[in-house]
Length: 320
Length: 259
Image (cartoon, rainbow over all chains, first blue to last red; front, side):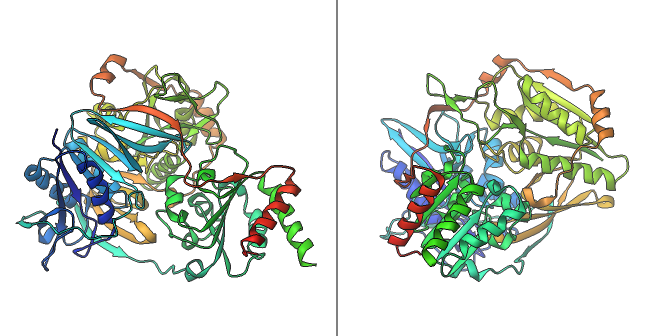
């Protein structure tokens, strides 16, 4: 059984971003078992020659693709599928990827699996793993004959440290114009938070802290450590407890301190992808099945309001 | 303006899903609490805010599921929504986003909605697919992860601001009808007022029955196996009293020279 596999490059201003190598790594895992052709697709306004290692490259070149629009990328991907006729389309699970991937699947009468974290191959069938049920269970999905679109969690498939031979590059000059989308403008809010980048220890608050008053406790805990900073999960930021510039996760910051202390954080895939490279992870949560414990070195099933004061007490004992 | 908000009811994240015998799905115990998916609650709030700005706007709610989801639809009516539609299916089994989006697209067919709002994803499954798939099936533009929304009344368009990775933003205009998947920071959902709670009591939720057999035909992906999530790290669980755990943690961090 042969599979043609299409990979959608993640790009910024026409340059292919590193996460694309992870998509190729995922595709290669499948290709290693079948006689598959890998074709990466690069939509954009491409001015410089380009190629990609480990796959052929199909450039969909159009002035209307100078910047990302859901409509533009959908049209470019549809055009590419006519050429490649893929069985599997691999897209990064980023704010770009999850915006158009499900649409593409619907238009191809196919199916879609988002935030895929692994694949398992047995004989002739491939299963795709993603987490569900609040991150507590792993689900393995099988798919039928229909075309499949998957979005792959950044970091799930490490890019190979060796460079494969670049494939052949082909360019299609297209005239793709978004018709229902206009006045597209990108901005970078001034919310630099270098504190998090330099912190050796990050104490992060989640929904479990319950109320703003408990932040004091989180700060006290952080002050037990040198070069520490506080951060929060999405919910902590939405509740106004923590500034958005200190949000850790897919939509926030990616951090990798020596120590990450997760306080009352349940551990959604979105949060995990922002902190999983931390050297040591300590989690405190009253739910013994909280997903965060799977990514922790030290797990403490406790109520924060009881545990943190006890820890502060302990710290005080050793100071005196 | 006619607005539809699609909602999902989700179980309390602290409740424990139990894997079935065939290991193909999980169920919750009968004492599990359910509530509206947090992201969808923001979508309902956004719809109500638009109605306050633009006279003559109506806000409908739609949700797919068994009897229990009525309480979530009721809650939206209590928040102030005008009508609630329950696409009834007598099953707790896996229902793919592909099927859900087909069912809602069919429901939308004669309703002529100008704007459809959804949460960016569900808290429990986090697929984030039903919204964009629905938009594609209806042939309308969509935007996900939206943190700001305003209606350009006369131009028949909306302006949205998406949240991108690493906190970057992107704003754009979408021609109506359109679908928007809202991100949780967009607003603060209101608590139902007493008058709305009373009104909701007298508002009937409109139930539309779906044939179970119909759902099987279009099923595309299937859950082959479900298991307790594997661990990325060999975490150790501290035992003992709270004070003992605190002491052990202190010692362990000290040994790692972190304290």
